[in-house]
Length: 440
Image (cartoon, rainbow, N blue to C red; front, side, top):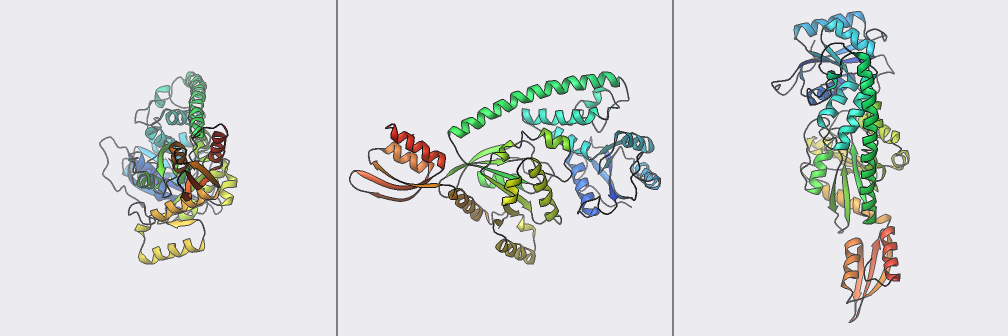
């Protein structure tokens, strides 16, 4: 029986798709409810503009080396494929190359697994040079292990990487060699991109604004919050993986402090290992961030499981200490909750220091979030007392621009200022004064 339908009308080039979530025995399927995992898989398929005509759960009592699922499940799903004229089946799990080929033969249609689907989405969405290089590297590494089609199968026929279609088996060995050569070239190009990014980071260190990174599960509302805070127009849609490439904008906090806000790619459960490795450089902004803000969709039924998935990936990226110390939790989308649910979330934030409830759409809670970020950055600041001639307008202006002036008293000639500065700026100011400069 069909358990899900696409909500939006298909585009003219949409492929009819069946989404299957294998329900593994207890202990193998994680903490998610099968229906929830199936719904997420449908969302992933729709994110690449597949026309999902049916969605099915498939119990797996024992993993079959040939087809993953048992013979009865394969035959039942084959009938669904035939009845709905399905062109591609998305299996929400990992398939070996042998399992993928056998299922394609059994169902007479294209079959892709969760990794292939996510790579296809990333291939269609990446926009920056680094993003496209990273995704292509991940896709080729994945494809090399299961190459059963010619090189043209890897071309971006649908804006992705062609996992959804392509010609038959030809020139496999030549294709493998071409893929290997392309991977070597991509790695060289990525090294160049990484060096350029390091130059940009070095430039920011010379004008050291704190970096605040937004992280969270895909479709948690990070880009909507990013736009609300920075008045930008980053793509923000109710869609999985609407944002893939990192985006950075300046932000002025209530105290007047300038910071850099970074919007990052959304995480997802069972993120392909190829992408964890390939996108490490893309997520380096998170590794260098002064504050990491975990944006959560608190209206989602699997909010807690999603939070766990995000923390797992952050730890894989080397942020175990940051996670263990406690991320800033932003419980987003409270506008979607009933009054009773919203009150429970507000009570939850009172019990959990570091949690804030907001709505990126209505703006509720955003002033409190900005104030909290301001206060947290102030904890690392150093307070110094300065006396400057009133004629030193450049020096006084520099202190206001780079610090938080908490007290000031002037006489006819001198301005006495008490100011909080980041350690780097405090040292810059002292060095400038020692060298007799009016401003660093």
